[in-house]
Image (cartoon, rainbow, N blue to C red; front, side):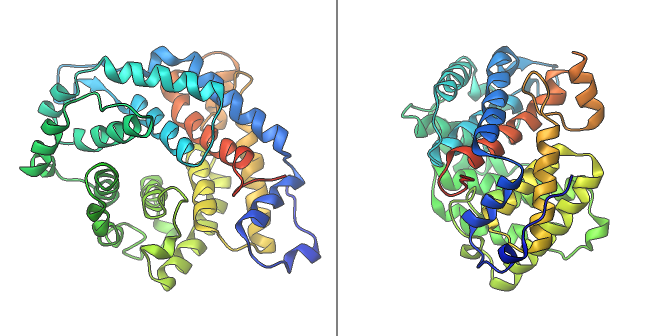
Length: 331
């Protein structure tokens, strides 16, 4: 199903709100809100799965990623002004889980704990709570360079710089354009050679450069690079529509909004189809499946939390922004 704009609409001056309103050809605000609420309800129903658990006795013996990503979703929706009783309940569960874990021991095992701990501190502070670890301990490890004692991919360096910028000093964000230039996009890798990991590196980099849509891409990129970025987001989105990867597709759609991709007839057609595909991935239980195969497994009750939780977080983020914020309103 492909929905396109009228000839008159093609000539409208570009504006982010008008771009999002084009989705109303298929989606009204009520339906998008329902998708978002269903996704949040699924996350809440699986609250126990977000609790940090020991998974092995190796160098990284705990599974903290799901909780950190849930906290990230909660803080970003808060910063965008999205509120609801369900989000309040999710926040209470997530903060309680974080308080029950020894973050100091995690840092002692692995320097990569820096990003997660900074993210956690940002979330707690955003909601008016002290971080669930000693700030002096974190500052000491950062000061002596302990967190630099590992190799990171460029977009993971951006991840750390962004989160340190949020909780330590905005000066850390000054390095992000340099790290961005070392990504596949920054190296001008040909788009047909992009792997899924390369696309993830781009979407996450856009999240940090744009502060999740709260500042323009041009605040950190020159105009030519920002223009090329918007063009490649369009091409990659079209590719992901055909690739059966809802997780990456959802992140790309968020990047479209955060970067205010130009509203043309072709772009609008791609956006409509991409959002239709996101809606088709919503299961009867409210989860968002990352592929057609996992969607079928979810409908049969055979999909696991690990298979579903990240795409459901992405879907909740996308649908709630579309339905609940003034900037991305579709009414």
